[in-house]
Image 1 (cartoon, rainbow, N blue to C red):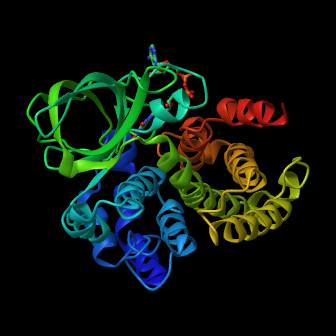
Image 2 (cartoon, helix red, strand yellow; image 1 turned 45 degrees about the vertical axis):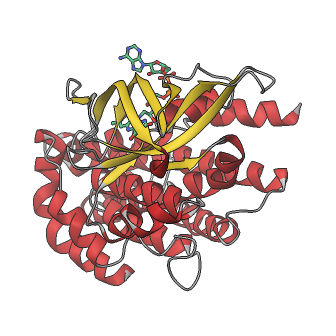
Length: 360
Ligand SMILES: Cc1cc2nc3c(=O)[nH]c(=O)nc-3n(C[C@H](O)[C@H](O)[C@H](O)COP(=O)(O)OP(=O)(O)OC[C@H]3O[C@@H](n4cnc5c(N)ncnc54)[C@H](O)[C@@H]3O)c2cc1C
């Protein structure tokens, strides 16, 4: 499967990447093709023979060698399907689940805010109340990617719960973008990753029926799915770093005699990448592990992935020099893209906070 995705990415993405980057073009047909090839299905519990995160990560990395927007959209898709198959909701597993796993239905995840909220960084943005046969939800999420009118996304909202210690409870659901009262606003232009169909999502009393609930209460479930959520993001980093190493190798012929004085060289970066891939593969083998030491190792691996992405892209920029600094230069695009790996939730600052909090 990974080889088929690699071949499709090599065929489709080089001619599209400028359009994706500069015009914010959303590579929908490529996303659907990857789905048909099985790119979003291998990591899903109960869907195939085994829960195989590494294969999904490798597919994402294969696309990420060309384009981080596409690779991130693949992560969004993987996360959406992950939420459904890690839940106890058999209806979702028989309806939207298989469609998400095959790319027939596209979508993403609105978990940045709750992931920050659960670790004490910001308040929950979506609020729900009990209505007939479900919940009524309102609130605004500034950025949710891989969306469209017929797409879906995983979201968490807070409801009043006098029986809980805090007086609140979190509930997680799969939300159809087509739901009444939900609007998508495309009012932000990003410096990179603009081809990801990232919208501000406004929910005005959107009815979420019980059939779309993934977890209620959600906190234990989130603790179960969070390692997979984070580890899958490694695919974005690995693909991007591979391309940065390649860019550095390519400049060896014309510029090696002077590039050799630069602090970062492709060989140590390649060695670091092999070590990162091995560590992620080790951790990805047991995504439902509950030991706090395991979660700490996942956070550390994610932190390294973000920092190594920025380091590799910075190095590629310096190795390429002016040929990377032109408007259609790959190195400057990879540098802009690399910062996304370090700022998408969990961002570098959040990861560092989590590690400090764990030490106490
Ligand atoms: C291209 C792109 C795609 C994204 N896709 C998704 C997605 O699919 N799902 C998802 O849940 N999140 C998504 N995010 C959000 C992302 O994961 C992070 O939450 C976000 O980048 C900020 O994270 P941070 O930890 O650095 O928070 P900070 O930057 O420290 O932000 C803290 C708060 O500031 C708010 N804020 C952000 N921008 C502004 C602004 N311009 N003015 C005022 N306040 C602001 C944020 O909403 C947040 O509440 C996306 C972000 C980007 C840039």
